[in-house]
Amino acid sequence: MSQNATIKHALPVLRQDDFAQWYQAVIAEAELAEESGVRGCMVIKPWGYGIWERIQKLMDERIKEAGVENCYFPLFIPLSYFAREAEHVEGFAKEMAVVTHHRLIGDGKGGLVPDPEAKLEEPLIVRPTSETVIGAAMARWIQSWRDLPMLTNQWANVVRWEMRTRMFLRTSEFLWQEGHTAHADEADAMAETLRALEMYRSFAEDVLAMPVVAGPKPENERFPGAVETFSIEAMMQDGKALQAGTSHYLGTTFSEAAGIRYQDKEGQQTLCHTTSWGVSTRMIGGVIMTHGDDDGLRTPPRIAPQQIVILPMLRDNDGDAALLEYCAGLRAKLAALTAFDEKVRVLLDKRPGKATAKRWGWVKKGVPLILEIGGRDAEGGQVSVLRRDRLWREDGKANFVGMAQDDFVSSAVEELEAIQSALFLEARDRRDAQIERGISDLAGLEAYFSEDKAFPGWVELCWSRPTGAALDKVVEQLKSLKLTIRNTPMDAAPVEGLCPFTGEPAVERILVARAY
RNA sequence: CGGGGAGUAGCGCAGCCUGGUAGCGCAUCUGCUUUGGGAGCAGAGGGUCGCAAGUUCGAAUCUUGUCUCCCCGACCA
Image (cartoon, rainbow, N blue to C red; front, side):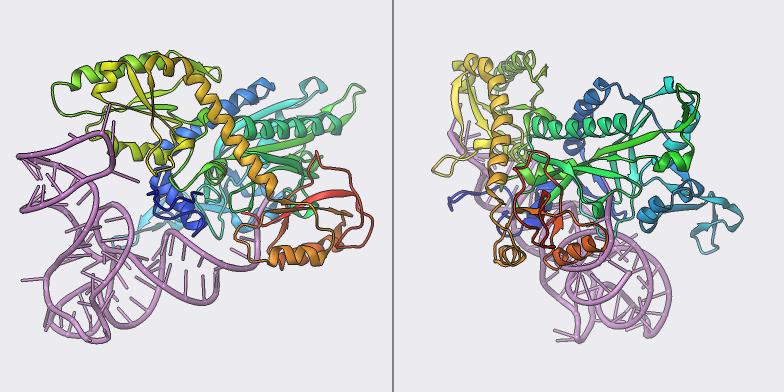
């Protein structure tokens, strides 16, 4: 956040004044998405969808590298599939969209109503997740130990009828990938669960430049039907936690429900152990709240639909042709470069209008490098470069740096890598500075989160990992402070002392935080 | 789903109490003048006032219902 009062920021709301409103302002001003008029559903606009396509491409590569194959399963799941697994149903029942009719009929008043004659024999659920329908397929596909492991993934939309929605973070319909795998035994399934978790951790940090903490969730936060749930948790700039991806070891829960069995080497019919794991468009919400600033989004170069935008300063006169030619030449040189093992994505913005007026649109979208090229630049072989992560000069003006075209072209890849790295380090340092590790009792926890701090961050503490009713009591205590247990960091320091909730010897470290 | 707030031009809002043919700013378009950094002046276009019933001679305005959004809670792989 800027301390310089003379800066005229591009957004109408600053983070420090109203973080929730700021978040929505970024989405609107960066043209990521907008309201659709349909409850809880958003229209994802080109820049937002472009970011999703980048995420899809790079995640899909990693999924395939792990030997997982893409499939597609039905949007509609028969109600009876869910009924096979009680815990799973209970977890999702309250948020399922149900299809009950297959035809409409006129209501005699100019409107349409479901035709009572066209009521479905068995209601269809719009998938909230696909364990049941994929389980049914796996039960058909898997016969022998030679069929294992069965590694599948699908890119799809799912629907969960959430009570309260927020764009990208919790929408009724969202886009995701869901990996579903079946294995011969627990060890192999757990290994896959952890492989997916590590894939998500490294993706979040290397691609999204979003530092995360990976680890198992407490039992009260498990996916319905899971034996163990792992998550990656990211800290947003307001100090809240965002669960940015999950990976579940499902044991034999869904194998029993769907009859996923194989004949082992001894000839015995044996239940498979299954996993599921997913990341969604929620990741974009995480990117916004990790890298956004008071001038809009700062899009990490690896997921930026355009990494460099060239803005010719057109004058509607005879000089424009030469200027455009110069810019086209520059664009071609940049587009031939390779950054992050991909062709550099560079756009020459030839739309009519003043470069200065168009500039702020790209600033708000978070294009990593913006070039404004005037007639004098063209004549002198120069460029003016604006780095999105170093937007302002001391005097409150846009921080353009002039340099020779050749120098820029030869350093552009390095610059993009530097921006990617700078965004990650900034986010990591901010997060690390906001994790409090010095609290060892309940009163301390209460005091810490009762302070009138705008963005309190997280607390890491040692606990005794209570279960059942004892855990419920802890959850209730935390709830009164609006806190939740995020996960148990896998790379945490050694455990020491007593559990602040139970008074028993601590056995592991957990992260406690307010969450989205 | 409970409590609160809101829906009027692309965006932000006034008008509503006290019913009488719909307004402002920004943006857009046109013209002129400017312009190496988020231009100025003048003119113009653009709205079934979320939707539907009702009251009324007449509804943005009053009544009822309904949809959507925002905030707080409950809920939330």
